[in-house]
Length: 496
Image (tube, rainbow, N blue to C red; front, top):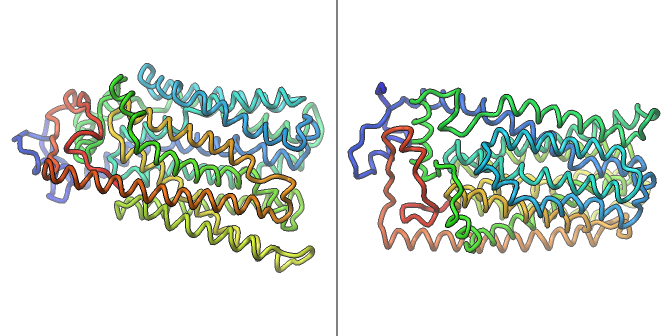
């Protein structure tokens, strides 16, 4: 194995200097390390970006279909429509853990391609729903198969990148859901305006076309998704070791295997339940607005079709916020304070909308209310920080899989709650819905502060008991990808 000079600014070199053992390590220049990381980026991130693009379209298209008569055609008027929305999250919550644990038996390439194809099929079949039972069943199985995409994407990110890069890398693929939401309104407008005859209703064509594209992406994923790092065919042995050293220098996890002790440890760790509460509150608010945003805009004074178009800019704004907040979070090494600031800005948005609602026919008031709604985007715009924080806090492949699944389940329950935040009886001002969103965000802010306190206290305790953290870098690829530990390791320090 050839040695190449590396500067002292390289993080792996600094980690090696801290290690008490004298080990001959592969050395690379910062430029070479960046080249390898870019190589990984192009192999790993595009497939996750694609799935999140289609996920946003497929998960939110029911709200757009509502504007073109799906309630009347399927008999889901009133609260039955809210039940149809929540069925997705019931299926999601039931299957998040078992589907994600399958990664210990099947490699990520097989699992992610299967769930992508299956959820696309569920969306396609929604086009043929004729009654509440048919729509409920399709939505339930959509949730079942989508349940694995978030924890699996989090897991894939954690096995390729060190913790200090998780927020931004997560933002890259998660923010594609914002791009998908931006396009969803435009796609829906085009399909439902032009495909008005044939064997399906306009909303049926929406599901049929969008589900077909997701199925195609699932098939493509089978051929282009890389295997786990130690078996990745696009990397040389030296490049694999560089990736391993980057993970080790940041105390990330390498070994991918099921561990029963880690499984138990995950459920008994109070930190995951506090973080799950944070994610629950954030996701409940996000779900409520993502499903009922078009109706909220319509209540301001827009027509049905214009409400679909005017809903798209919110997703584009979310994309910008997600990237900026995640970049800042990685740059500063902070997670909790970024969440708190984003939550406070969202509260400002909801307060402004409640007290600045336009009167009927007030065009200036409509645009004022519409612009003020953009402040609420700081809530979905900071979700990537919570997701990145999850893989920053917990270590151990099984523990990360389980904790990621718990976060996904919290999101599922949040979705079920969020689907009832805005009721038709609350139209047009939706004051009860907006107030409920603010209360949830306040609870999330308190929980984020509590988790920060727990993590700071634990880091100080370990510093006092064990001194400065020591890092060991492996000699070769086999050793690098056989190491196994959790965040209970004395040399592990939490990011807060």
